[in-house]
Amino acid sequence: PTSYYGFESLEELYLDENDFVGELPQTAEPFYGGLQELSIHSNKFSGRFPVEHFEDTLRIKVLSLHNNDLTGIISTNICDRRDASLAYTQLNVLTVDCDKMTCSCCTCYEDGQLVTGTGS
Image 1: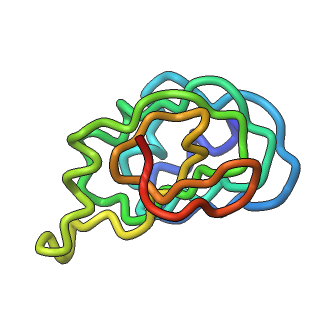
Image 2: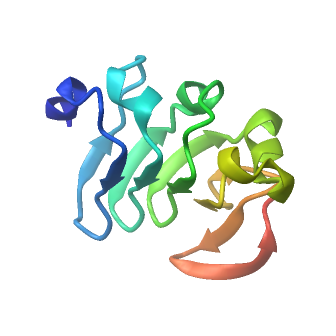
């Protein structure tokens, strides 16, 4: 929702299980840079996930994207942040629909169900 654009200091956004529909903004909006937790699983979001807006931020700890119709590729740069030795800047949760998104380090879901292991 574009109403979130004005929340430059927004750190956590949980929109889970609300049947929200539509695409996520593809432009660099102020709220992406400050987010620590983005949990939008179990909605009806579609289109490409704007992964490039999370490439340079070390703040994001949670990206819970599964059970949507999002597509795209989670980059190696983001996967490298899953390393436990990073402590304060570690990305702790990264979930996607692995039948729709490419990711080598994500916790995978397919048809709303957790799949053992990580993505392809």
